[in-house]
Image (cartoon, rainbow, N blue to C red; front, side):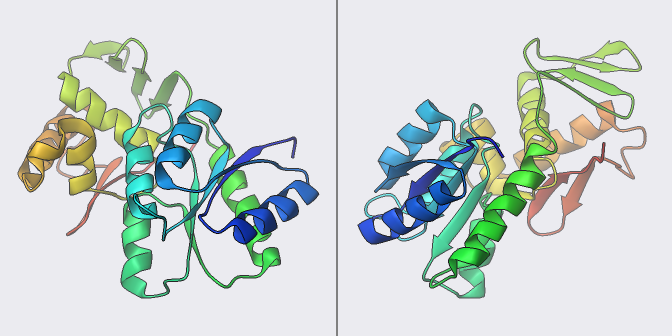
Length: 231
């Protein structure tokens, strides 16, 4: 597995030590944070392969940490497994909608945690996002902000490009309209979900072969959108 680095975020020292011991015992490298602010700084600076994120943190809770990470283009695709004592379905759904890759309720067995860590790392490392990305007859250069369809450049506005990039870099994950508004337009647009819908419609007209029956940008009714593509 190599020494993949895992960021452990928990305000309880005994939990951090337990996770650290067991992860390092099977060959992972670990770093630890005890609050949300520290977690975000370490995620930005250390670029871990995965984050184990406790939900109930002092100050900034796990939901907000997850949201901040997903809004930062440099670390937005970092896989996150949420750890929490909460077990209500609504809490799980909210965590997953904000971008968590998995959810584990305390108390949990170390064996189950290790299995989930391996599964998430295996799943996310199988489809790394490169500088360039192709799907169907579309080719995108993220650095140049250039999109080609059948080798012909097509014009996307800055917001359209950023929206498409965010969907692609979270391929297979449902992104809520509010999340997309936060990331692409900023907090002042919260509630203006029609803005997202209009831009999605414009993107589909430019990149989909049939924008009325989109193949790649899927609408998740009542929630948001998901980019679908299998290599």
